[in-house]
Amino acid sequence: MNRRFGKTDFIVLAVVFAVLVFAVIFTAFKRKQGEFVVISLDGEVYREVPLEKDQEIEIKKEGITINVLDIREGKADMRKASCPDKLCVRQKPVSKSGESIVCLPNKVVVEVKGEAKGDFDSIAR
Amino acid sequence: MKRNVAYLGMYLALALICSYVESLIPFYFGIPGVKLGLTNIVVVLLLYTLGAKEAFLVSVVRIILAGFLFGNLFSILYSLSGGALSFLAMYVLKRTEKLKVVTVSVAGGVMHNTGQLIMAALVVENYHILYYIPVLLTAGFITGFFIGILSQEIILRIGNRI
Image (cartoon, rainbow over all chains, first blue to last red):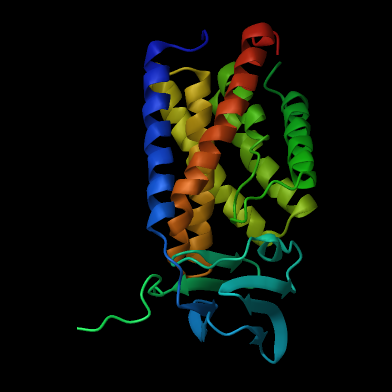
């Protein structure tokens, strides 16, 4: 049958864990503040909204508002949703390029794209 | 005697309770698909006591029933995808007979989240959410690890009696 840990297990687990942690740190650090969000509904682009201006976006499907996205201080947060589980509302606000908020039942995806040039306002050549 | 419907039904009920408890605990990191994976205890237990067929059967039926009871039609789809991938990984790893319970469970946890994320990406027709794979895999690793330790202790102590 089976006993507890073996040496093979420990090596495999340690290696996999190390790779995963490295991947997480690596991808997290590469993320930069995004410029705008792309809102897609049912796989198609619905709207592109810049993150610089504070605003509230109502995502409508056939005239009915199904999700409400709030943009404030450069972050996008799902405020309201018509889905039963509201997991999308509970997701943390996103602001970095590549991050996203997803409402699976409503098929809404909000992705942060572009890279706001953080350090410099402009570069003169 | 051990493989009859009533006996497996008991395991199924256990798995359903695990699903229910999971749905009560708000375990989210702000990313779709992070779950405790408590139900994998039952699958791992079955895999190591009664066998692969029984484990797979209970797993699938549990997913469907739990979906009807505590979730919605879409959640069944995601869970099935995660569960199938997870089971496949666990079965293959167990067959090599080189790795122990905990590692198998970790693989199960990791694959479960992966399967769910892939299915989610397919459903919303957006592949950029796959960005979350590293975080999800890590979460799956950790939950799989603890579930594995739990399963391991159960199997070692009463494995031949259940």
